[in-house]
Length: 133
Image 1 (cartoon, rainbow, N blue to C red):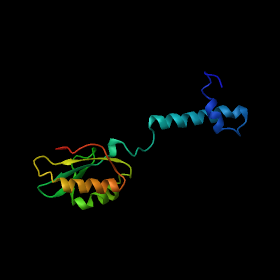
Image 2 (cartoon, rainbow, N blue to C red):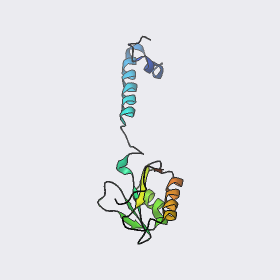
Image 3 (cartoon, rainbow, N blue to C red):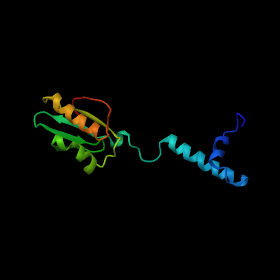
Image 4 (cartoon, one colour):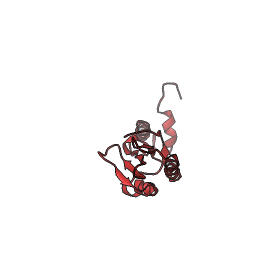
């Protein structure tokens, strides 16, 4: 393999292919690698599907919203994981953010409980706690 032969690593994926067809196989392998590097396909960690969970201390409820939604859903904090999985259909290993509604009691124990339940369900915390949406 020379330093200018970029297709050489792809020949190991196409060992049984005849020499005249090997270029097609190498091209397909190269395209798959490019698509992977460029992030094509469904992302499990992108912010477009990252739920934002805000604790509302006045109502003692949680507000869950996706960045693409105009308003969130007010639900019991115990139901956040089920809501994110079943209603919003956010895949496991996705990121989420957590914070509080402005001018409400932050109640750190409740926020920690919500975070622990999301972490336990396989979601990844990316920031917070923040005030406001």
